[in-house]
Amino acid sequence: MSCCMCEKYHWDPQEVVYEAPEDGKEYCLFHAPAEHKYAAPNSNKMSIDEFNAQVAERIQEIVDLEDENACCNLRGAVFPGELSFSARTVPRIIFDSACFKGKVSFHGVVFQGGMSFEESIFENVVEFRLCGVDGEASFEGSRFAKTTVFAGMTFEKRVSFDDSVFSGNVNFQDIKCTKFLTLVSTIFSGTTQFKDVGLDGGALCISTKFNGPAYFTTREPPHHPIFFSDCVVSPSGVFFENCNPKHYNFVDQLDLSNIHFRNSPWGKKGRIKVYTEDQHDLLQPTRDFYQRMKAKYKAESNENEASKWHIAEKEAQLKLLSRPGESKFLRDTLRLYKWTSGFGENPRRAFWVLVGLLLFPLGLLIGAELWSHFAWWDFDLVKINHMFKNWLKFIPLTQAIPKDEPGISHAFMIAWQLLITLQAALFAFALRNNFRR
Image (cartoon, rainbow, N blue to C red):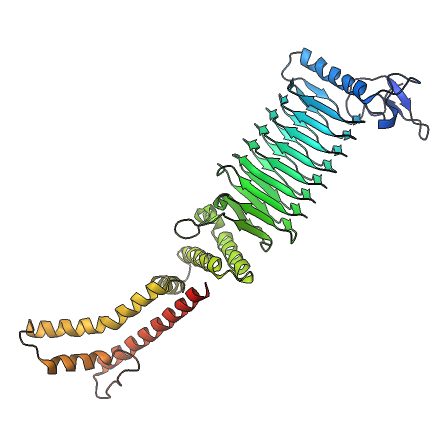
């Protein structure tokens, strides 16, 4: 006689305490259904405390080995009621495919060598508070039915919640991840809080689903970026609060409509620039990201933010056009657009360029007069009046250019009037954009 689950989950042989009448399968104490926890066949049912004592004894057996590479195998175990551990150091424990019927609480526990809860089922509240994990921690494929809390945790190595499903609210508070945190294809159905989270090693959110509202605040800028790609965000939204989003990578996140930033400015000083802009192979995706962010804020009628993203988009586009093989004409045109009006967003610059264009011909005429006569020793109003009349020929809508004007001068005057007209249009465009903000 042997437990049908012990071989499947690589346990040492355990005494059979229950045989299922419907299929004849035999189970040991740890793998028996929650309602059939017996110390021996045909004995009285164990209490939850008695069962938990057996679990603690199994863990203590591994501790007594004093082997840092040893681990406690609790794969596939069924925990019938509340399970609680506090203020102790335990070896690496493997809870893969376990089923927890009651509340699970780990408080002040140090997991030496890591822990694994892959494909486990938590039917009640789960709390990990003030725990430390020296090795890798994995919750891949697990199911959390109710409220889940990770508070004051320290993870020294990689943490994975890939393919996990959180049906209740989730609270990651004041945790520190020294290495990487992964949330690939994870589903959050309730309210999700990442509050004061230290992600020194960065994080990866790919195809993550946020069916309820989610809030991110980071303790400090991570040493490595936090990636978001193909995440599905409900209208409830994902909010980044009081953090530095420059360390977040959204270049592969196509839908940004329900992602919001509160008190998390992308550009506190100067223009917006994310770190991927300086990476050659990510410059084009970064420009596309800037464009999507501009469209997002335009859709929200936030012209102030849309203006900032417009400038960032054009700066990235200018870098793209500066690459070998790109159109020099388009590059120089865009560069001129920047110099003359700040990409249509800086009316002050456009105004002073317009003033310069207006005054430049006057300066040339004054310089020519001074060169011809070395100095105006006498204040000749006739000469001054003639000079100003010539100046007006360079300004649109002031004085018609005489037909007898020499060809080169005539062409220069027409070209200059066209420049002033274009710059006036740019100034009006930039001023209009400024008023819209």
